[in-house]
Image 1 (cartoon, rainbow, N blue to C red):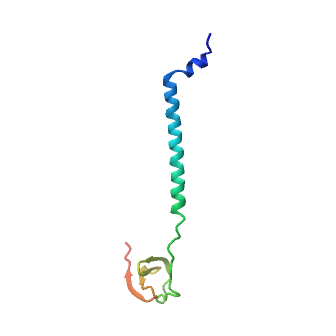
Image 2: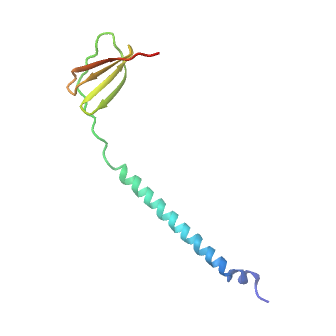
Image 3: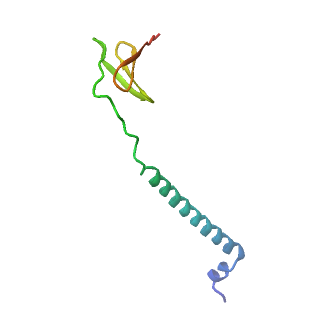
Length: 101
């Protein structure tokens, strides 16, 4: 008598299934290696330098709540519902009043 395990190994569908699983495994390994490589290369770049003026003078009585930087300007949100926009040298360019409901 033949061994039942040996007859099952020779079924063509199992050979095909084994090859599909092997190809899927290799594809997934290649995809993970690609993702890790891309993430590694992406985070190797140095972040853009954040150049700030030495000092920003806020109008009297204002307390800063938030700060943001744009291309060629800085903005400071104050506790008195104002947005103060400054130039790169620290000079006040514009004041915007924020109206809250």
